[in-house]
Length: 165
Image (cartoon, rainbow, N blue to C red; front, side):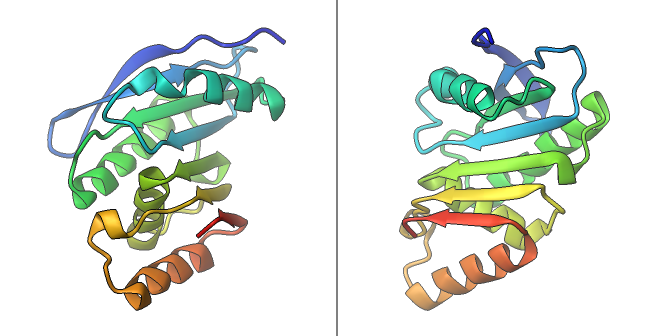
């Protein structure tokens, strides 16, 4: 299977702002599933995930899937959650992909944003993968609050995999 090269796609957010996303297209021309990748260093480079996303889609043998890596930069938490909602709406409206056919993968700050998004919006996801969520960077200094948000979010989504929380 050939490696997929990303392109840039722009999605209009809830506030009319543009969300820049790295996009990996389906290899078969059919699009049945999607992976959304939220990284730790999104402000630096939207396509910074290009080797990771391409390799992940390849390893999971997801030929009918697209990959999206939205760049929320330094957006406040609420804006990033609304931005994720816009990404899900874009997948539904432009590709016909329902939330239950989406795997949301977050690492570091991206895992924290994914957790808060699932806690606040409660989508029916195919799966949620969180790698080293960083809640302190989001203002959750109280560990009880941090763990409650994580517990509530992972109770909503099944299956959920949390690494190094």
